Image (cartoon, rainbow, N blue to C red):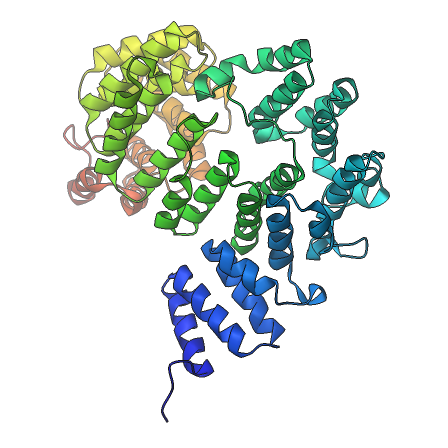
Length: 528
């Protein structure tokens, strides 16, 4: 049997092969060609649209989707056509793809937003479509207050928007920074400077730590395209933990097409693509973002995470250094924090410690609340290269800032315990950390080890057993338990714990554990 270049069977095999190999752009082109040949096969056409959306080939996706009758469109294709219409400021056209009978699963959840903006543009009550029973009981409900606020602020109706702003922020979760800034700019445009400042005052420490450019334009949500993009980003972001990432990716792709300048959408999409194993595509999504973007700090954070996730440590270090060099005197704590992260992953502990130290100094000078984090990170790197006295000083300084931070208390307490320093203080710190975080297996382990070091072996064994039950895969806990059991003459149980520790131990620890299994516990093989 022979095939021609455009034989449907051959095209289908090639499309599936490209799909399996992760070549999304090629599979999208092949499915589109196949759909053109089989003109009335709407199932195939829908697959072609989905493939093109997944690849970010928007022109191809729109072209293919426009061939499909409205009643045959799938959710992703319908949302993309709506996004494309809104991107071109064609609200009326967007409304042709949905109506009151369109099911939520087919994209009907955006209908109230489109109708709201349409009614407002016609001088009628734009809130009415957002106040129906369908909205209060549907997918749009968690986002309804923010959408009402966006609409009213676009009409410069600040006083009417404020109750919705308050309710939206109260339930915003991780989106609070973005929404608070959007609302603040909306109030500012509506000539309510006092209202805008009131929103920003509460957020000031976080803004400083995130390097958000407060005075940059483009943060407000003031068009139907931006409103729908914000909704799709909110829903897509809430679905990122789903094992099947096709739906959140398609939602974020549509949001990105509707509002291509939204760095928030781009960052969410990039991080989701990376989790789907598509690191190169993820980085490409971030490439077009302007360095003057108001959320450029978040964009830089995301780029560094993607480079490190791909084990491109040298590129990550180069990126962090180039950012600092380009900013010069304007470089902030976050910029040096990124460099510290990159150098840490590149196994340059001394360089990382230096970068974190600069970050801590800048954070302190700016009055940022997160200075303690940089001090803790610096201490971690200093300890790893034997500079414990400096690490200890950093930890004490961090505890002065955050006296009830269990991570700091456990770090300093355990560090002193390992070295036989200030054992009473060390145990007290660990007990305090555990009181603050009673279900933390690592802190429970620290307390058990403190008890063992102070000769209270029976109590230590009981405490270490609790830690091992809470975190069965942590090698260090099992090794500590094994050492304590061996000391009490319970050698069979000790060997069992050491074998459990060996399963997840790193190379150097594995050698020590094997030596204990071969010859028993000795001063040379004892855990630290």
